[in-house]
Image (tube, rainbow, N blue to C red; front, side, top):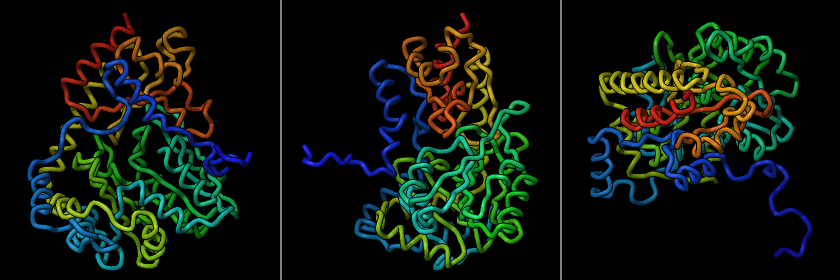
Length: 398
């Protein structure tokens, strides 16, 4: 016990307890439910990439500390990927930084670029680490809420402009967007870029789902718009694209001064990580386009299985244009089943009701009432698992 009455957890983190992912995953284990809450695949990625990691281990590459910025092979592969996919040119020695997953990249970027009191405008709902990292940096988060419109969640550009004040330092943009599955359009991105240039703002853009866009949607890097090259920190990750989420290999690409700033914070977080896996991810990024096409087609088919099943079960389904998550509105299930539209209560009851675990979207909101009736399901699972989950969920409609 402490002899002081002062709380042990500092006030900046006092609002953050155990993550909802830990709570719901524990509930899945306890009840034997199918876990469609946490976003991790239930199968490994390409065998040749896993073997590349084994080969690196056996060859002694990366078993000791790798270089602080990341192994040269991976930094070169990241730069080549950006050039091949988007026509973006980066110097692998000065403009690429390897991180312990995208989560560390986000944390290091915010710690490096935000001063205490700076405002950070972020699209709400947002990945839960955003709020915690802004708090750790001493910043003030300013949410701009994506709201349902014509079957998807859309950004109100007027609301975004109104959120920017003289205290705003940075925009934190996520597209394809977790949890809503929204992919910002070329017109929306152009307006965001114009605002950033006009108000002289820095931008962090989280693009970890860049290879998971469906139907007519297109992923367009924000950095490719006029005036954005010198003010944008772009974040990518191997975990979502290659289904090796446990490897924790992410990266930052940005102009050299921004990378230098982010590296200054990153070196005092993990310093380095995932040595042998970095060599394997370098090989993964060089896979032919056929891999990325097949990966997207597989996830699209899984999306459609789960979306159809959720619709039949009585949910309102917002069919995602990207990511591997589906957001639903539980209110059409009726007040009793939906726990009066309370996503937290619904998700805690769902394992007993149907043997499935999901995540309440309200955890991704500052404005909890805005997110109350929305629930997120992950479809990055084997088709057989999704079909079993769908069969269980349909009991709700019966």
